[in-house]
Image (cartoon, rainbow, N blue to C red; front, side, top):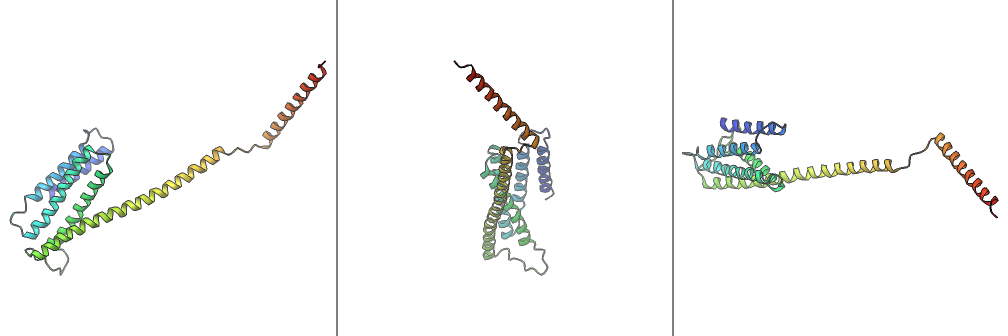
Length: 209
């Protein structure tokens, strides 16, 4: 487990460095993340020798999810702007985390007075398989709820921004009120223009034959 945590921490460190513009090779964050998942899959795959049937089942389901993470991270290198791939990877990582937590309670329940599972009982193994399906559905529902909340917040924020922009446009397009001096100056110029026009008309009439 120390190796798994070490590589997961390394992947997070590389993500932070890439985010802050460190001079690293392109797509290094995806490669390190993919390597972390591959090492995790190898470790869980080959430590099942001599385990009970339920232990093997729980870890096999976990390894399947880790395989999905490896494939999705590799796909994200090619389709990094795909929302479907990004959401699928988030779903798979979240499912791995919840099932990891569930595996700990199934095999090593820390609660005092908890009844141990019969790890070689077929019926209880079927219940474990059904619990994995419940985790898949629950993770999907959780992601849908998060998406709905984010969409609602973005929509509300968009309306607020739209209202602010409309107010600014109205302020910009509204005619500015003139002060008293400007009004008097404009009125004086208008009267001078009228007098000039009247004089011109009178000059034209007096010179007419």
